[in-house]
Structures are given as C-alpha cells and as structure tokens.
Length: 149
Image: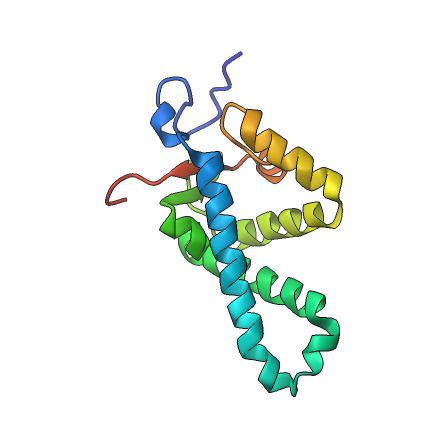
C-alpha cells in the first residue's frame, strides 16, 4: 500500500537516500557519545567534581541538551553531520525546535527501557525507510543528505 502523504524520498524509487543509513546512524551515535563525554568532562571541574557522584544524570542532561540544540539547528547532531545524514519530517522539512524536542524526548524515553531500544534498533534495520520507533511514532526519517544540500 502506498502512502501518498509522505513528501520525502520514496525508498523504492530513490533508495540512495536510505542506503547505509543504519550503519551511518550507529557511527553517528558513537561520535555523539564521545562528544557528550567530552562535554561532561569539561563540565566536571565547574562542579568541583561533585558531578562525579551523579555522572549518569549529568550525562543524560548534557546529552539531552546536545541533541535538542544540534538537531534543531541543522536537523542533525554533529555525529550525523559527519556521516552526511539528517532528519526530515513527513512533509520533507528539516526539524525545528519543537520537533527536535519531541524526537529527543522520545529517544530519551526509549533509552529508559532496554527492550524499547532494542526494538528501535530492529526497526531501523528492517523498516522500509530505516525508521526507529520514535521516527515511526513522529512520522520522521533519517536520510542521506544531498550533495551540497
């Protein structure tokens, strides 16, 4: 069944937009994790190293802000930019602040439950548009950026 309400590249007629997206998302996630770790390490001295006692909470907060800010400013995290992928809405638009916030909240929620995160990875590997559970819920996709676009 074809859903004509989508205004993003069709995975059947334009598969190049979805080629290697699962691998690129995984590498981007690793890059972002390293960047968040570096930010957390930079913040530690400003807390007189007290943040070491609640480092997972610091990590979560920094990661949340990092994702919302970077995604709302360029429809991709810095890791995604390195890997030349970006998020798009069902209408084909780049993410704005409200959509970046919704996506980050959904992503953060999926991290609370290991099974949700595993199912999300499975969805990325098996769905036609390589969508995570959050992407499926919001009607968003991660696609390869066009050259110069």
